[in-house]
Image (cartoon, rainbow, N blue to C red; front, side, top):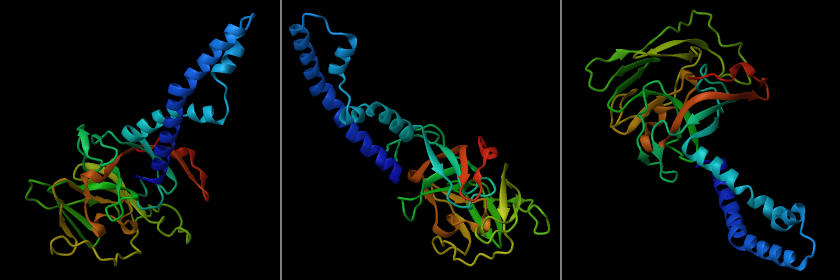
Length: 293
């Protein structure tokens, strides 16, 4: 559970206590007070005077009145949609640093908000989906990547090339990407402040699912890959109930190649749309709004 969600839970709990205290204790007292005042007056109270007794205002009542709104926000955020900010360039060119995406949380099942276990199944993650999940090495952190390998798939990443053997298939297929270091499809000019936001863009055919990727051929990956059960370097078989994810910015993404698989219980939802895009250096990027399918 991230910090914002935790704050919303706490605020909802506090305002719920105040709201029910007002409903069950204070409001009956105000109604009794109104009845006594009306009985002692020869002239009937005006509508404004009645309202002042029944709804006196003040900080307590203002805070208590926030409960219904916070409850609706909490339910929507917990079970339907949650905003997520892209903090890095690892998903370029599909998503940029500073994009704010909407995550559809019920796409992969209605889940227990505490354990994230599925209560009601809806659909299963598909190859190519961009998903937000709890980072396996630190579940308090949310990550966003693209699903490359499904349960039972064999994934091989060798010298910058991606190969997939789909579950049930005997053929190891090289994933075609039309990215060539001789091409001039540069994302933008090199910026020393953000060196990872530079590269050559192209289209990758992920066993029938096409999407944009970015390569930086000036970078050589030197970090050690995740080794599964002693298998050779850069080769993995996705376990049942887990997924292999990668960033679209291949040389600038920490993903399943380095820390392993994403368990189904760690999935939060699928990114479905960009509702805001803003950075301090670029300002508001109106053209980004509504992007992402």
